[in-house]
Image: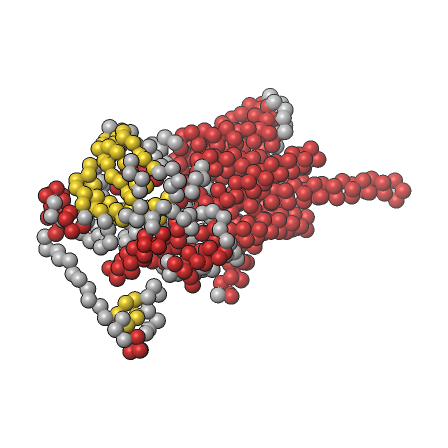
Length: 279
Length: 256
């Protein structure tokens, strides 16, 4: 009995190792992005914009699946389109940004569900839940490559924009008198967030992306006295959340993305407790 | 143009969606001159400043800026985004690339050296006003534009602030353009008051302007039942609120 089953068990073990490493790499890649861009999202109160992108991500997935592309591309294209549309509508000012976001978030979500159901009726066996709550353990090599390509692109543009982003977050009018192009900086940052959501779709899913942008940055705020400190700490908190989330999902057989978000939330409450205790 | 003119507006007009915001506004600012722009709410003061700063365009008229002009702008009293961790020195560094020594020097000039490492959200309103002034001074401006610098500052604080602004003018020889909604109390060192209500109602030295018929027509009634009270204090307040006796330093009148 032993000679027959031994090779099979070994191959299973190798695969398990493989997809855990892939998952860890994907999670860390996203944590680098979400941790750093999340700070600006918190500073500029853009949480609802992040949510809108996340809602529209499902439409991106549905379209990508219909034309047999990787979902990450569909999400990136739809996200960039949505950010541009919002940017154009914002210039007109008859409606406030949160109203515009509400309109776009829910129309995009509704359209996404309709397109997905059409795709399913035509025989596509796409798993809805995987894109709502992420499927980090199923991240493929190819997806991993694109996740890191996206991360490198977004982070280098982020570093390039850093000073301007900081200036407009502190005081838009002062930044403008300093010669910072406020509109251009805002727009590029919106595009960077759209790409971040694309990177995140397979890792934590549409419903939990905003959590990874907001929670590590919020935890980092408690311990930082300069903007750069906050970004570094926020990335550390995000990476730690991914590692703890993955580990606990292995240990207690929990769904992975919710475990990552719970780890981030636990770190936030813990750091609040520690902070209150000390002061 | 006379060559000591830094900034001049000629017959500026601004209409937005059929509403006239500014009409036929002309003014000029020379080296070492202090011009105070007063007017009621909605008079177009902020619109005019934005045009002069080059932040927006006028629909009519022209703005002349001397070629080498560096403008330091101190915005209306604002609060700085509390979510962003930022020390006073980080805030000042955002305006350009400065050496630490420069930042320390300019903070000393405006009298707030002690808050260089403080979080900018934790300093008082008066201190923030001075930090904003320091930020403008770092640009080595030939023009300083101050939007409502005395807003929310009590009369004693205003005296100190005006004294500081005057000394900045004297030390840097820059032109100063100041906006105020206070129609009756303007800085004593002001060379010229421009009274704006969509158009320029009147201009002149502070002593003369309060007798101008246009000024009296616009604001005269507001003076009924009010008087200007001259304080005669025997002490001053330091920025942190400590009382400093101006008569005899040894009287032990120091409290924190």
